[in-house]
Image (cartoon, rainbow, N blue to C red):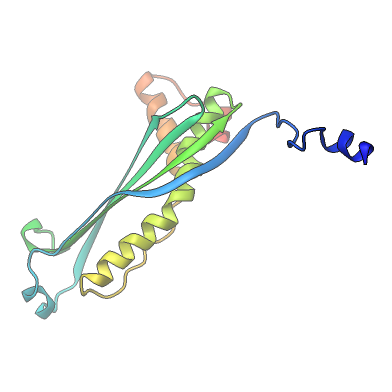
Length: 174
């Protein structure tokens, strides 16, 4: 038995982990809203609706190795191009606290811009779908989003604004 204790640690504590660590600490809804300003008259309309999605992300450091990432999705459905003919607006701010330790700056930025929203998106997608259906409208499922491509595009735009070309290392790390 003493050999087992020596191998597993004398106090039964797990061995200390080294290297980079990524963890999901908490996932939660930060804000949610649904509006259907023309209900119930809108349910009699027979025209093709137009959908517009706005996607936004914010990151805030909340501890030494903890970051809150908020993925905000606003889905606006209108009849035609006129915003006065709004069918509904569904807004969700899906948030999470992520533990990230042992990463260099570029890798940390890439993880916050790609992996964290990839974790949050299915929750936001489900919430948007539930809101729309609860509002009396046909079920709607948002299509998958390639956050890696969005991050790479963001790197390109930042590099252009800074007056330089992104390197393949910067894009490859996206």
